[in-house]
Image (cartoon, rainbow, N blue to C red; front, top):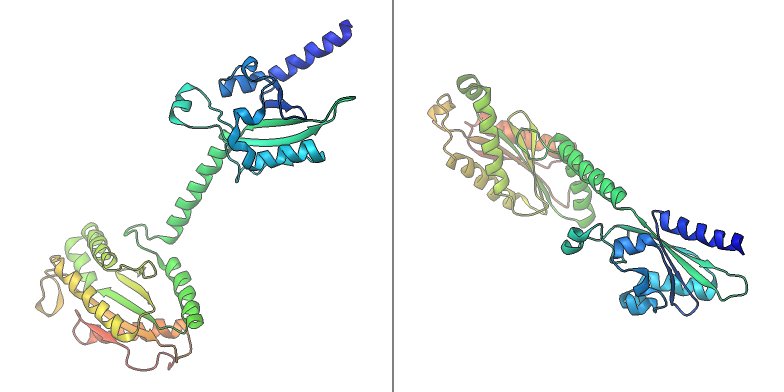
Length: 325
C-alpha cells in the first residue's frame, strides 16, 4: 500500500513538474486531470474544473479540429497531432496577466492521445506545449527573409526594382502576354547629360537627382502589374503589360513631362536647357509577333538612342517589327 501511495505521489509530482499542459478526459468527456501547468497558464485552479464537462468550459472547441481529435481518441482509439499552422492557439492560455489583458495567447502544439486503463473505460490525454518562442523565432526568420528578398530585388539607392528584378519580371510578363495573346510594351528612360550633371554638382547631388527622378516616374504608375526598374547608372526601364504602342506613347510622354516639371536645375544641360530632362525609347510586342525579350529590349534601346540623337528630352518609338534584328 505504501508502495502504491509512493507511486501515486511520484506521478503527481512528475505531472506537476513537467513544463507541458496535461488534461485527461474520461469516456464521458469529463475532466479528471488538470495539472499545475494548466493552472498557471489558464488561471483556472484544478478544483474549479475537475469533474466538469470539457465542452462546458470550452464550448467553441466542439466544432474545432480538437473536438474531432477528442472524439476519435475516445471512440476509435485514434491519436492526433494538431497542425500548429491551422490550430495556433485553441486554448485561452496566457503567459501572464498583462498578456491576458492584451488578448495574447500562448502559441500551442497539441497532441491528443487515447489512454487505456486496466478495467476502466477509455480516457484521452490532451498534451499542450508552449511553442511561442519557436513561433516568434519563425516569424522573425520570415521577416528577415522578406527583407533579404526585398534587398535582393530592390535598388539600394532609389528603392525601385533593380536589374535582377527587371530580368525576372520581363521574362514573366512576356510569357503571360503570350499566354493571354496580349501586348507588352517597354520604355527605356535615360537622364540626359547625367555625366555632366555629376561632374558639375558632385556625386552626392547626382544621387539625389536619381532619387527624385525615380520617385517621379514611380508615382506615375498606378497598376500593380507595371514595373519601374533601375536598369543601370542613370537609365531606367518600365514594363507595361497589356499596353499597346499608342497607350505606351501616351504614358512615355506623360513621364517625360513629369520629370521636366520637377525643375531640377542643370546648368550643363545640352541645347541650352536649364533643367534635368529624360529621353525615352519605346518598343511594343503585339500579339501577332513572336515573343522575344532580347529583341524587345534591343528595340527599346535603339528607340532611346534615336531620341538622344534627335536632340534629347523627347520620346521615340521603334517603328519596325520588334522581331526584326
